[in-house]
Structures are given as C-alpha cells and as structure tokens.
Length: 135
Picture 1 (cartoon, rainbow, N blue to C red):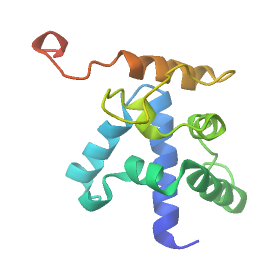
Picture 2 (picture 1 turned 180 degrees about the vertical axis):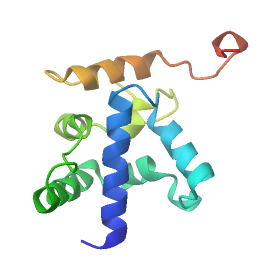
Picture 3 (picture 1 turned 45 degrees about the vertical axis):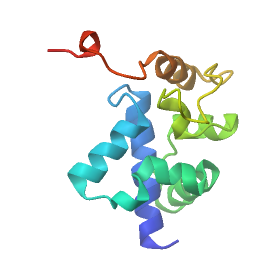
Picture 4 (picture 1 turned 90 degrees about the horizontal axis):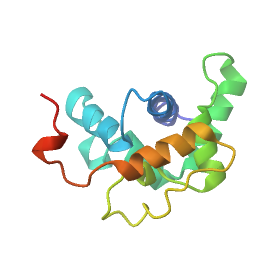
C-alpha cells in the first residue's frame, strides 16, 4: 500500500474515533479543519469526503491491513466498522437535508455509538440561526 493511502486511512480512522467520542460533531467539520487548517488538498474535499468517494469498505480494509502489520495503536475505529456493516457513508452523519445520503438516520442495530451519532446528526439544524450560536 502506498504512503498516501496509509496516511489517508490513518487520518479517517482517527477521525472516526473523535466523532464517536463527540470531540467533533460532524465529518464535514473535520474536513473543513483539515482543508483550511492543515493544508489537505481542497480539490479532494477533505479526508472524510474522500473516504466516502473511495468507499468506506476500502478504507476499513486498508486500516485492517495496517493493524495486522503494525499492531496496537492501529485498531480499526468501531464507528468505521459499524458504518461499513450498515452500508452508511460519512455524509449520512452530516445532518444536511440536501444530501442524497441522509435519509433514514435510524442507526445501526447493535451499534450504540453509531446509533447515537446518527440520532445526533438528524437533530443538527440545517441552517444555523442566532439561537443556535453559543456566545
């Protein structure tokens, strides 16, 4: 596996962990930070968007290969595994009503962290208003 694929898979895996922990609210937030703050190529849309484009099963397979080769510290994120099993995409977690991939935020059976995130994503307002902005 080439270096860029390893770096991308590791980034997406860690991002899935911080989503599950509630550190980041949406995958699109991670994309914005990495594009605008860390120089991720804007034309790729951010690592989470790119993971959806590549396919989460492919990303998970890359992470699993790194875990097999490199051991502890490279464990696949449970959220990433749950999303692959449920056929979900990171776009499903963004909560935007205009996305073709946001229907049915019912979550994954037997996967509480993903279910919690799917419910939270469905509750995110599609357009911020002053009442939603913390001061």
